[in-house]
Image 1 (cartoon, helix red, strand yellow):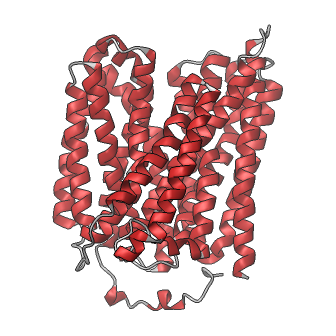
Image 2: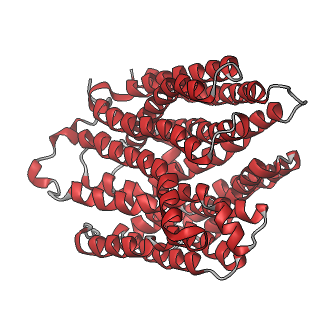
Image 3: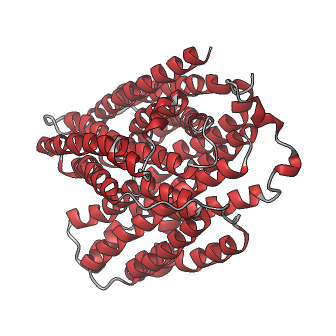
Length: 487
């Protein structure tokens, strides 16, 4: 079954009309995207050396991670609009150049204050890159190929995320405790320069752009709304303070003001930041909802897994990273498989993949809740390996097909803006899911004084996976409703 709808024209594109270098362009975009993803996960193993070298306290160390994640989450919509209006090639090159400069600034930072500031700007530059990659898929690839293209992007997400801790550990071992952590950032400089040069040579030139003024009031309202959501969610994963939820009140106010502004004054002016009529396209609105709900579950699973393995059963960071890598490896394979199945199965691939994800999450929860404390750590990891791999396969099978389906009814014009909206929803899902799932985990892990720590943490991880499953079920309901709409 082909992708549904009255889109048969997408299959009638002549081969002579296609860019013969589109796969090369995608590879370059994935290379640039990979730098931003690697830097998101590489810091998980270098925080102790950073603390020892800079004197950073635990809160400052956590903001080395959180500041980057926060910055990269607030940029995509604005970056997508800039890519649509001023050219994806230009925005991509600006993003890569800024990322390289800030990587050098982080790696050479003489104190923690400058390190955190440079890290935040590095995240802003990384956020500029991401929407241009999804936008170029919309621009260069006909509909039958988009599933495969997004599948490669999804696979790259899994590979680079899994590789981060491994690469970080190797570079720290190579450079030593004092210089190794700096090497983790400085290595971006030569790689980034090479990617910049290649993209400047081979990235497809922009078509004639209709340049509109940037909607600055809209940018301000959106930024404040996103900060009021992402900041408390990121902070909650470390402080666990329920009062942080109060930030959601101004978040709702500013989000409502943003939607009103975009739908009325900005639209009348002729240059809104987003086109609110996109939400009337059911495929896009449902894809946005699936992405938001699913990413609440997707990254939260790996976050609490590392906490459970290290704090609960006493595994080293390196071994725990290897177990988490199983989940990431499954994600990479699932993204490729899902992308290839999409042209044949259409939107049916989403509930199938979500079902596989649910089976893996349920099995992992049962194993952790019933076998922790009864099995040695090696045997427990062996029992968890299969469920985690299955969960990763299902998760990867959701990410790339959902992106392709959400953008299927949109043309190349506006592709980066719509892609930026999807990525912002995913970043919100990441932050909110991490906060809620870790809260459930810590609620059990810190309650009482259990005589068997491993068993106690196994129950905590089981509860966290139950919350993960509920988010996944929400995404499943939306995906099934979308199929029923298409019939």
